[in-house]
Length: 316
Image (cartoon, rainbow, N blue to C red; front, side, top):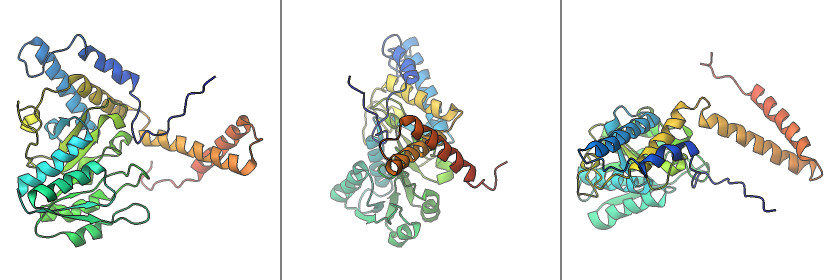
């Protein structure tokens, strides 16, 4: 009998939620209209996209649903943000700042500005916890700096960067702040207003949505030069017939997060505590201990640990 593997790589990709799939299915079969078409089928598809856009808006805490631009994923969103925003401000010879731990998509977009548009690039190092210090960002800014790109949550060790503190440095100087938030949005940790970012990249398959769809949050009147032109979709920022089923799925996945009675972080923390307790017991008492013994001890340890946790000062 083959035992199915236990999947522990949700940072790479998450399984599609069955409720999300159910929401998507009609748009593969019955509701097949092009959302740019003025007839009934097209208007139905357009309404579905508007609903999904509102759902993603709610997920990230944006003020206006028009601040959400759908893309094919976080990689495209990163390129649109970095290339599009930088070139809109300074077509040639600017300066950009990022960190040494960014996703390859971010680093590649930055390098493209260097190779083809005469930009200079500074990569800021991180400390032993994978954290970039805002003071280190401030130290490398120049009068030619147009954009800073710092990931929100690290995809390997989970470190959250102090984006709000970085925004306090960049905003007064008129420097745009972009974040690759693909890893944090699915945990309900992303609030663009609170963090003060101008641009944020998202990916649906990191939050139990479908692959092949993402989005870029673009704050207010932030100027962007489109990297893909044609039919004028997505306010002219990303041409191409929208992938309606995937967009609907993205919206559904976002809605599940914002309406879940138990925040994702609470559920994940409980699973982590249980896993750590079981692993510790296995190592300390040996392999002859039964699973029932380990379960009972793990429950006791996690319950005791939670009672010892300090109560936040603003808790009721």
